[in-house]
Image: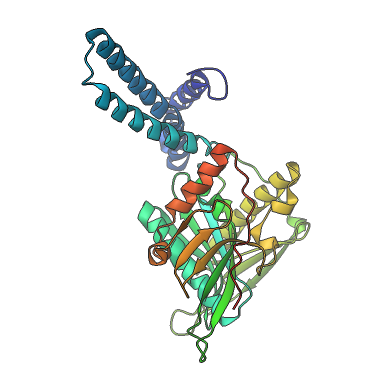
Length: 361
């Protein structure tokens, strides 16, 4: 349990350090700070306790096996095999979870969707994806909030969600990329088959323990009225906020609140998260992979295809995971693709997308 890649003793030491903080005078007076410490303790325990339980389970299986050898009875064989299969499944599950041990994998996440090539059809596709991820968050019991939305006649041009929960970023980071839709367009009077694209980008919600410095001189700040389809809920003041980070060209916006001050705070949080990802990729010399938003949202860059006609299939072009139950996927059942991505990472398999040869028309 100790030494090597996974050092349980080191984890227990960190747990003890955090638990010591809870005994300090005035600790519970700052609810936000206390909550972060308790969440960290929970995440640390979740990273080590399942392995402790698995080791105990394997010890029990070994003891049962030795008893069966001593007694000479063969009746325990089926029970031993069943327990070994259960232990193997638990080992694989925890091994996948161990991949979510990065600095921000346990964080909540911002998820952005942008419509691409395809006009009205693509705007509808972006809306369909926004619904899919909303349903996924609901299935998982995560909290989802829309922090920026640019609507269009056919659906949406772009949307940014904040999804709060444990390991949201770790689960969703593999969803970043170009998503392709193939279907008979409801907007085409001739009922022709169309191909549309939308990009998905995922980045972590940072807490106070991760510092990203931003020079005010590097920011251009624009305020504007929140968009919408009209009616009594249209904001009559310039409460929406857009930040442009001049050195990197990164643009973020927030229009979810009526208060400009609150929108500024949220927009700054998004900007810091994007800059964290940007500088992290720079440090790792992987700028070409830094953002799905920087790729051309069109043919040849997709990571997953969703085909409605002439057959139904959702296929991930990196892991080759696929299903014919497209309605379940659009209702948020995407865990099979998330798990396939984590499995591929665990096994060290290449995750470059391969074209599946689906025609554009």
